[in-house]
Amino acid sequence: MARKCFWFCFQSLPGFWVVFSAIASLTMTVQAFTGTYGINYGRIADNIPSPDEVVLLLKAAKIKNVRIYDADHKVLKAFSGTGLELVIGLPNGFLREMSASEEHAMNWVKENVQAFLPDTHICGIAIGNEVLGGSDLELWGALLGAAKNIYKAVKKLNLDGVVQITTAHSQAVFSNSFPPSSCIFRENVVQYMKPLLQFLSEIGSPFCLNAYPFLAYMSDPENIDINYALFESTKGIFDPKTGLHYDNMLDAQIDAAYAALADAGYQKMEVIVTETGWASHGDENEAAATANNARIFNYNLRKRLAKKKGTPFRPKNVLKAYIFATFNENLKPGPTSERNFGLFQADGSISYDIGFHGLKAPSSDSSYLSLKNFRARGLWANHVFSFMISAVTLLLLLR
Image (cartoon, rainbow, N blue to C red):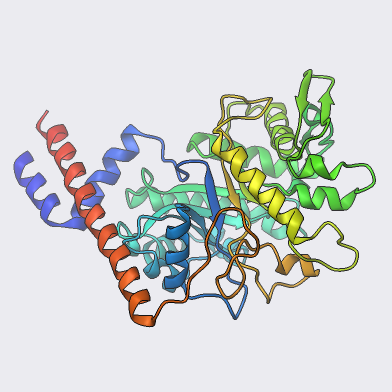
């Protein structure tokens, strides 16, 4: 019977995937982030490269971890067979619907996740973005229900060992964030945050933080040393409660989140930075938004992440961060800086040099062949991976 089951799973990829996912859910905690460096692929623009070209760009830059803010099927298809690790998003506009209906949540997961696995490596679902602390109070109440129903669907489909459920928060959920050790969750947020943290803790998910030294500096440029925000040489700050020294603002922002988590009773929860970046251009009142500052911040951040070190308060938790963003997005509302966070310009060229290369301009044929080769290598890797896992499955079934 075991041999028959193994043979079926090996010949049928969907069957294999069910068995592997079931075993994974019993034997491991799913991790949506491998390594330390990732990037956000926002698409609020009408002039950026196609998803197929973006695959080439990210592969050339050796950026494996990618976040998008929806589940656009054109993107999911473009990422198929590439080996890139993708976190997709359930937009804020879907939260009420998903919170109210387990059936709708199941349909959404089937259509946007299960249908693309395993060729597209969907490793996470971000439930909304910056909901708590935002202006729509109705969404605050819908967030946890949506997260639970999406997770229930993932679990019923035996994908909970493959796909991690998270939600990202802005700095607006915090109070008293300076010095870092004094940070707590805002009083009006706590009643929503604590049950959410309980759920995330139960399923082994991290606390996801959108942290921008750029925005913090812009809010108080007279009292914040820009070098502190840019990872440049500076005297930094001293936290009198912990006795810890901070030589850059991002570490302090992350440790403030750790302090708030500890205060709420979740001191073991990991913090992952899901957005951080620096604008390369801004309005007249955004003097810090320059290409040189953006280059310094992102170059130094890349070096910081490459060290695979933790923060002063959590030195054993290796810092992981997704950079915002891949491209300048010309249709984003708000100040000019909002449209100029990209490491790459709309034509695929670099916005400034931090060691990446932009899209070259080969002939359409060579571009197609290049993409086809990437896909071929990715699909070959998927078959090897499937064979290896099938072999492990056989051993477990024969025990």
